[in-house]
Length: 353
Ligand code: NAD
Image 1 (cartoon, rainbow, N blue to C red):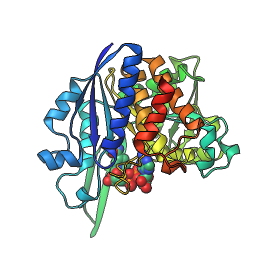
Image 2 (spheres, helix red, strand yellow):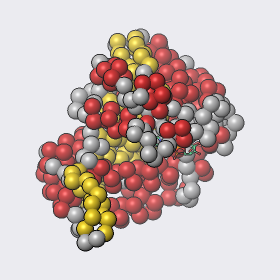
Image 3 (tube, rainbow, N blue to C red):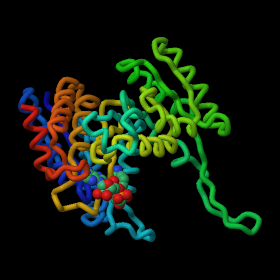
Image 4 (tube, rainbow, N blue to C red):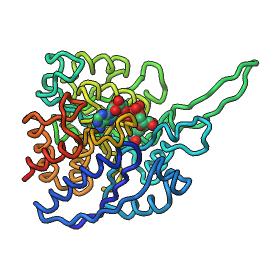
């Protein structure tokens, strides 16, 4: 296979971890006879410094012409001024919108050897293997009106929670397709006891489920889902939910694993183009020290192979290499070890060959 992959290292530790994920992609390409053509582009703070725009046209064009995009992270104290006209995060929101990335997927499995890094007891973690499918381009983060004004002499602010039938249909459908390759169970999360948008969400979810007779569709209110994630996470398989609920639940779920540095994510469009990135930020406190954990980015590269290039075996090979490197005791500082970013990637590469 020939594939064009755009790398967006971004800010902070982004360049360090993306460099290591690229090495792993190059190694797997060589091993399996593929040719990956890489192009590096700016996004976020570095793009503001270079062009004044957190998502320069050249970056967007390169991404639109690519088969897949691998991103490090954006942001940092240098660009944190709340009064700044442009901010690194705007680059992320803009690229999601421009590429039609409507679905964010975050898998979570607990590596048994790392369970002690989790704040939860081992018995709460056994068997945890779930995926959160979050709607990414709708809901309260984008609904209109969104305004500040004065009412009855008091300043007030308004956000709008809005979902349309097609928006709910496509995300629930994707969740059902993912569930078909797993244990065929979807938990749709909403706040249907209070919100009208959630009642539409639930209706549409039930209608979509009719097209997937093998899938069991259950509904859960977001507040009780938040509790169940801590108390009985192993009872979930695929969770599908709206933008804001997903934003909060995915961060909660990530805590179960004990380290932000381990977890990958994918943002998918209706076609095969996707953007893949670790779930953590740019970690300015450790940037430039060569100690960041590259595994979340390497596992994101595995998701890239699976979802955008349809290379399931290669994706599994990377995941297995990460698993056995960790099982062998290879650890960066965030996991209680002493390896640097490059050495951790070396440990994975050793397991690949
Ligand atoms: P963060 O995820 O960058 O860091 C939180 C903590 O986890 C820090 O102590 C950091 O050192 C550690 N950490 C994160 N990734 C790690 C890794 N790979 N290896 C080892 N340790 C790791 O979150 P934050 O500190 O809240 O945010 C820092 C910056 O990142 C902010 O500017 C924020 O806006 C941005 N951010 C970007 C994204 C993104 O690009 N998608 C996501 C979240 C935050």
